[in-house]
Amino acid sequence: MFAVMVNVHIKPEYRKEFVEAMLDDARGSVRNESACLLFNVVQDSEDENCLHLYEVYASAEAFEEHKKTPHFVRWVETTKNWLASPLEIATGVHLFPDDGVWKKQA
Image (cartoon, rainbow, N blue to C red; front, side, top):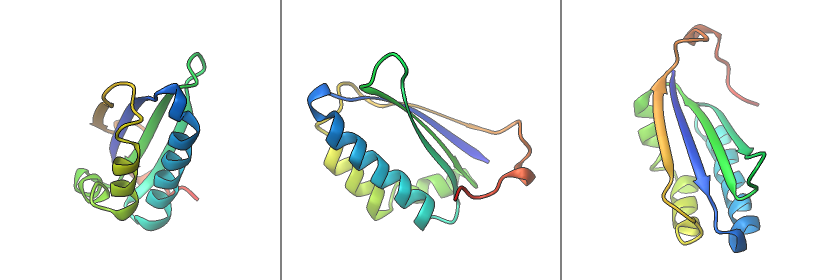
């Protein structure tokens, strides 16, 4: 499994709109992409204008396909001026749990 971890820093005046757009992308990813197994959006406990994304895809190629989907493209275009700083993105492969235990998020 291919994991994507993103830290997002939002301009405070766009927080509400950004969160709505972020949830639209997250829902679209889980609903419309068979290879997107998990998409979590977590609000930082110390900074409400910081979100942590944790996404799991069946492969790195599936993540590349994700970046071409209408909901992702819409999210990028809609939110590009609402970011307080560039996205902090890290990727990796799962060591635990084993790939065989993953099931698609409902």
